[in-house]
Image (cartoon, rainbow, N blue to C red; front, top):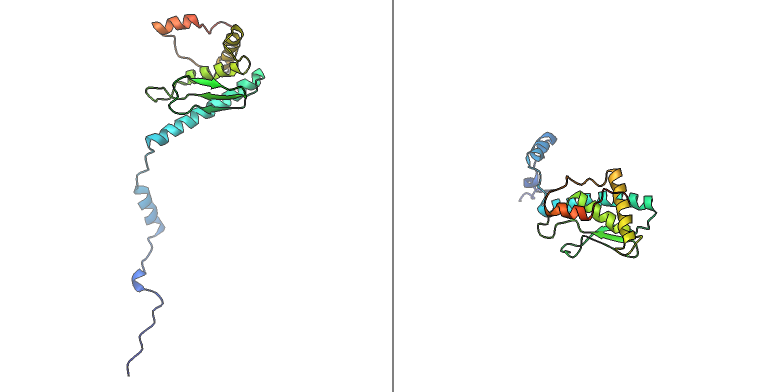
Length: 169
């Protein structure tokens, strides 16, 4: 008479001892951190810039009694303007240089923001608009939001003479 086969509840080959927690932690610590991709770094830069621009824009709009619906980043590839203001109070601002793709200087972004905020009151480029724009820009400067670099020599200096923002309107 033959002997019955032994019953197995599980496959013994699948039995493996789990490494101790310290060993697992050392193994995890030895893995180098994942380096963010260029696209992820760009998205992080855009997000941080828009957080500041939104905070400052809402503050300035409140100080001047402007009806601001929202501020958004302009779509990629837009080269026709730096910012645009819609009659419903939405403002879009281009964050990146059209050729290099680099994030624009913060002072340029704030300048554009102030320009578009002024359009919420004067939807044109009249003398009243430019006067109002300078008031908003001067307030942004006073609050520390607008910090342009030193004046340049050359063609940019001529442009500064045409649009001297130091005067209080």
